[in-house]
Amino acid sequence: MSGSDEVDKSSLIIILDVNPMQKIVKQEPKILTQCIDAIIVFGNAHLMQVSNNELSVLACHGQGAKFLYPEPEKTIDVRQFDGQYEKFTLVERTVRQGLQEVINELSNIRPLNSESLISGALSIALCYISRMEREKIPGEKLHSRILVVTGSNDSATQYMNYMNIFFTAQKMGVILDVCSLDQELTLLQQACDITGGNYLKIPQIGGLLQYLLWVFLPDPAIRTKLVLPPPVKVDYRAACFCHHELVDIGYVCSVCLSIFCKFSPICTTCHTLFKMPTPIPPKMKKKKKHSEIVH
Image (cartoon, rainbow, N blue to C red; front, side, top):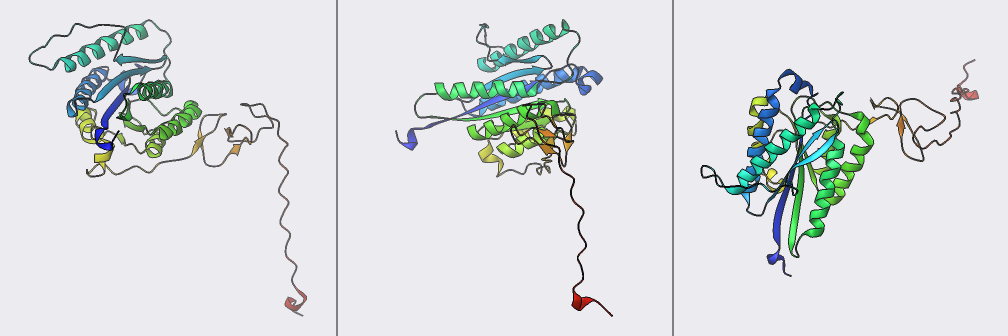
């Protein structure tokens, strides 16, 4: 098949953090409604760019992640409403109904986990992309990217999962974009830098839709021609496995590559035994040569 017969398809997977324990959501519960409104418009704008574009939306929280769209288990009767394109109506109704179900499920869980499982949602998204790659028709070229929209803090407890996901996405050619609503996310900055995506901490939540359309809607091939916010300086410090804090200098297990801020004779990850480090001998003063001795 010639190159002219290839069909390019862009697939966008949006991961929306809906954890009610997020600081920004606890301060202003209506923010979640604003976010879902912006996500729906943004997703429909992606579908409107090219007719064969694909869209998926996942909801992420402290207990796991769930697909909001598409949801194959349900069939929603969609009719044209006020001249709106049927597919746009399908996206809006499916996402809103799915989100309402997720919120109802979370309301029955106590206590809620304050740490959102973003790494789990990213794993689901990569598996979904891998399935689409296997099912694509001959001559079809799939360009996939993932956008994470979250107001949660950075989570060093998911460090190992994050690193596996980032380098898997890089190997698969999947671009990871991150839109932070509240905090500077050091680990997710690394994801954008490794995979060639964009990272943005929005200065004002009221302008979320404008930032999404400006920074994250254009395809990666077009972004180099646009004037976008300058890239942030990425902090590549690793998180220790003992206290889950970023460290400048640490000890690395030579077997499983686990990182610790203090020496331990037993690796808590793979249980390998190590010898105690020998103290560094003091430096001996150099003796002056006979010719340098002053009489």
